[in-house]
Length: 160
Image 1 (tube, rainbow, N blue to C red):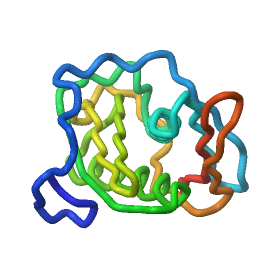
Image 2 (cartoon, helix red, strand yellow):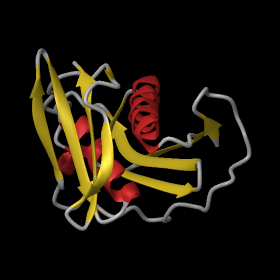
Image 3 (cartoon, rainbow, N blue to C red):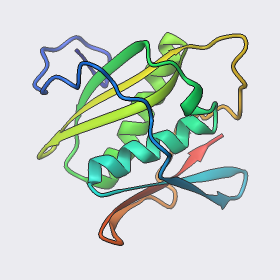
């Protein structure tokens, strides 16, 4: 297990499901913001909303429904503030994907109080993958994580 800073640490998290299920119909949306794009993830739980925000982020780069789920990444981080946790989650995913040259298509996040355990599945970029816009990182701009419509909504602007 690697921490957000890349150091090896023993995992405090439960094991993710051994067999990742294919990404379901996306529950995300976008909003315009100057030269960048806002991502919105919605879900029944906070963790599900974060997962859909990750889908929105990575869908800007490629269609997550076409990504084969053959490689797994995981990392952990600590964050008390749920809004800052969204940015940390997205930036951690982007950093780990870039480090391993992966397109990601499925995301899972587990939380115990302020300790977050992140998992994602994907595959190395293939020459035949249709590439969209490169996402550089998640920002604090328009950052909001709040209950909405019987569930949760997580949003922020991502730098393109």
